Structure formats: structure tokens, C-alpha cells
Image (cartoon, rainbow, N blue to C red):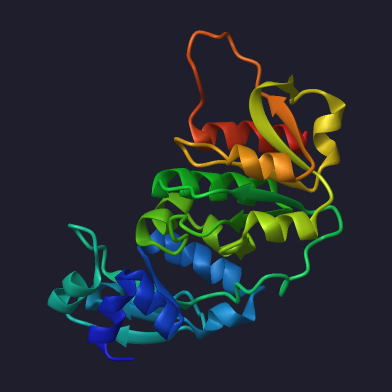
Length: 247
């Protein structure tokens, strides 16, 4: 793949066209290397490195293809102000619905039109930490393979199964009942909160459309607080719920 095409992978349309996304920096590449031990598709990664990283990359003993580039070329490939000198071109996973069979007790977290890359990256970290969660994203959500999301995920992007462009209608056909958050709902500490396969979370500003909730079998729950502020950050709300589901 030409370097000019690799640079284009910072744009979603080219990630979709070429089937790759970019991962930058030592920590993320190390996490990628670990994930590749159990996910064969990741072994088709290409590492672009400067001379300073040649020995480091060779010591990984990975099957990644190594391509040495100049400092100038690395600066052109990177979208950070001070590139570390190592960027991976990683194959996109197969994101078609139902192509990956999860564990029997796997739970799904559905995000409706989430917009903030930091929120999505943080949520991915939490899902990977506790394990056995699948992330479902609606259309008009931020691309999980956006470089800001990838960095915020700190490597969790390699460990959480993701499905894109999931509609609420498709969810209703796939699951019998749902849980979502509402100030008037039951406390999430109630045992019933763990009885669902899919948990709905809305856009940071608008939430899940009320008409959609009315059309599906959705039960409201709430995170009890002091009442001193109106709401929680989306990532914080998801993280608290995922913790509650995991204890």
C-alpha cells in the first residue's frame, strides 16, 4: 500500500474503502501485538517505523510486516504533533451483524448516536476490563476506528466485539427486552437490572428517542445520586452500569 494511501486512513471513507485503520504509539502497538496472539486477522498488520524503532520492533518477534520510513514521512502519516515513530496499519474486523458468536451470557451495550470520541474510547476500556460485553453502535455515531477513539480506548478496541449501524428495529428483532436509564426508573442495584441482554444508552444530549423506547419492551432504571446535579456524563453512566452488571 502506498504511503499516500496510508495517510488517507485518517478519513472514515478511506478506512471503509481500504479495510484498514491506523494505530499509533508504543503502548497501542504492544496491545495490538498481544491481541494478535489470539486473533489471526491482526497478524496481517503492517508497522511503519523510523530507524529509531527498528530494534524495538524486531524484539516484538511478531509476524507484522515492517516498513522503515523517514522522520518526515512519519510526520506525514501521523496525526499527532510529536509522532513517536511507530504506526500500525491494522485490518478492520468483520463488522457485519451476527458474524461473531459471543458467549452464552454475553451482554450488549447499545449506544444511540454517541458523538464524543473520548466517551466512546472510555466505554470501550470499561467493556474490555470487565469482559463478555459486545458494543452495538447506531448509525450517525462516531466511528470507533477514528484515531481519537483508538487512542482513548488504550488498546481496548482490539478486545471488544463491535457492530455498526445497528437500528432500533433490528434490536427489537434480536432481543426480547431491554433496560435503559431514566430518572424515574428502578434503582440499578435492584436484582432485576441483571436480567437483560441489551442495555440502551442514548446520545449525550438527546438520549434514546422516546418513540423507540415505547415501541420495544424497555424497562427504565436509574443510578441513584445526591440530586445536586442534573445528569451524569454518558461514559460515567455506562461505566457504573457495567460495573453493577459485573459484581
